[in-house]
Image (tube, rainbow, N blue to C red; front, side):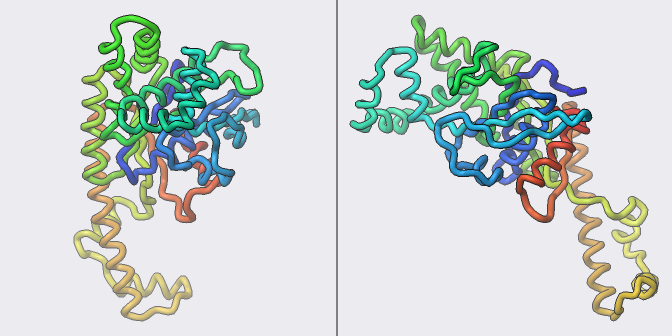
Amino acid sequence: MTDWPKVRLHVVTGKGGTGKSTVAAALALALATSGRNVLLCEVEGRQGIARMFDVDPLPYEERRITKGAPDDTGRAGQVHALHIDPESALLEYLAMYYKLGRAGKALDRFGVIDFATTIAPGVRDVLLTGKVYEAVQRPRGTRGKDQITYDTVVLDAPPTGRICQFLGVNSELAGLAKVGPVKSQADKVMDLLRSPRTAVHLVTLLEEMPVQETSDGIAELREAGLPVGGVVVNLVRPRDLSPGALAQVREDRVEPTQVASDLSRAKVDVDAGLVESLIDEARDHAVRRRLEDEQRALVAEEGLPTYELPRIAGGIDRGALVELAQLLRKQGMA
């Protein structure tokens, strides 16, 4: 069972440094089960997908990069990836809607494409969201070489501070273009982004600034009429100590002699410096856990489905992404 059975476009955002790209990749893996095809898109030009999956830098072309996380029957789907750059998207747009063909490529040689997408940042966002819209709306049964039908699209989106501007740019465009194909396309994109087929998920850490930015982002999304999804709490520290042990450490009720005795029974060479450093580390951990619990309560107050992913000591590679994907499935996100 999944919390988002009707969603075809999962938008993943979050404050910089919270690991939103990692969560987007893990979500794509989690969704690619039972033979389903998933497209993982990135729009920020950082080639993060290629690094995480250890593949060559992605061109402006949909490529299969891996299989998804297998379901209970062992069946896995496919994960494709697309690195969307605005220059290539504009050339495709001109060819598709204005039949420019070679003329569009001539504009690229003269630097017109780069000029248009640099001087007017809103144009970039229109093109990026337009390409995502095309992937989601692609007619069923389309199975050409470059036209795979996807069950779900996951978008590694810009950070929380820019997400409403990014997703709402077509609404502004529709207001400027009163008639014609530009307005029609802009309206269709906004219809998708504001529909139950889309969910905007926010990634946060259990720290004051990311949690506050997440809360602000949720309020802005709701005000803009964009569908808020769930909150993914990333990089959660392990809970190695019980609540009673945490309280004992915070209140300085730990007996150094008892710690030394426990270490000796475990056949560890004991000295006063080791015992003191362990108690100090436990105290820091206890204080940090209390701060995290306070932030976790603030996240819970938002009343949204919440998922937690652990901090992985070895860093993020394909194996770590599979582990995170399985956790998201167990928690009902995919």
